[in-house]
Amino acid sequence: MEILSFEETRKLLLKYKIPFCKTEIFNSKEKALAYVKKIGFPIALKIHSRTIFHKSEIGGVKVGINNEEEFSVAWDEMKQNTELRNIEGILVQEMVSGNEIAIGMKRDPQFGPVLMVGLGGIFIEVLKDVAFRIAPMEKSEAIKMIKEIKGYKLLEGYRNREGVNVDKLAMLLVNLSKLSIKEKNILSIDFNPVMGNNKNVLVADFRLTI
Image 1 (cartoon, rainbow, N blue to C red):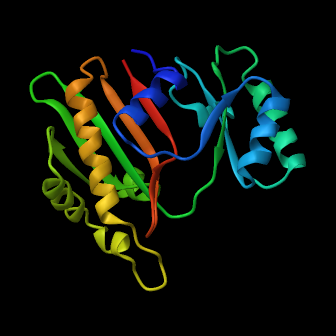
Image 2 (cartoon, rainbow, N blue to C red; image 1 turned 90 degrees about the horizontal axis):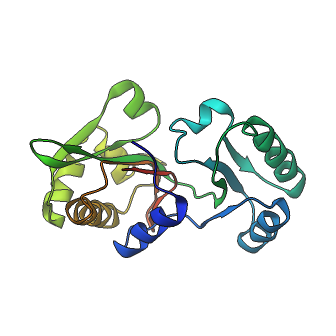
């Protein structure tokens, strides 16, 4: 099992209208910085490799980079951390505020694509607050699925916390369902986190395996 390249991943996300944060891949620090100046700070840096499944464990993720000096230090550290590893490049990505959501797909030998949605961060790691469906799935079923999450109240907006655009989250699930049905070579999909607020729902981290 290996991870799809960034370009292959981007093509599939665009093809199935799955929205994601502004992201480009670079091996040149100078070109990466030029892109950062285009999209503006704050940004995140993440390695992309076909063989590294847990990039944060090897120092392959840097978030909350706010200026050129921080960018330069983070880029150099990341290159040093991964110099003996086979990486495709370093992703430069805009940072978006919102609620962290986790979405995924696993291809079951008996049932086919099984979709998952849950609250991200500690909610999925500790509380395992998730809901499942077998693809294909329509929007009405996606909304039901989202409402099954125990922490759904947080997605509606709780006290001073901004909510999530549930319609857009549901459409992301529907489009993920379409991708899962049609692209039979994709064995699993991890979108974690997906950043959701009242306006947008954008995939911030993606891993598609074949």
